Length: 239
Image (cartoon, rainbow, N blue to C red; front, top):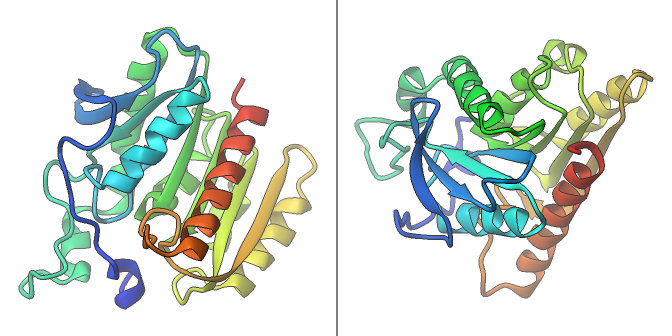
């Protein structure tokens, strides 16, 4: 995720945002929302700005209101990317926070959720989190996955997917270009053993689902449409 798109429109982080609370889960500080008695859980994996982004937590609350137990771990351990830090550009930051590490750290979180009595888990990832989610989708840990404007994912990773997966992309995205996502969709649709879905949203750019301008009616509408697509996917397959 180099280039300006991954790091544009940084959110103003707020540790107190959201209707849920933070607790330790699987060794990570985790924002938790929804009924802990739900048998269905959704793991939301943030972009480089981390789990204190208010719009991400608001989305977690929205998913929780649909009946899911939602967990948003702090995979960066209090060290989200800071665009203003000239000494630590995103390429340097990523050396400390690689997606392989995120994948490994997600497993104990999923196990911890299952130990609470959860019987089905879905995961949605945004940018950095999309790269973690596609790795998780190659395992049997998940029932379904959604990638929203993912970072760089590869054809090999798409070939390894084993669960129903939806990919929501932006028309203006040089990190996950629409042409590439459509090719991934063709590969996925050739797999008859699970469902897949690729949708490109017109007029939006990378990051639009969690870094939209709340004053821009069109931007809000596109983000909410993507949120609904994500929620519908989970309602269909995480059960």
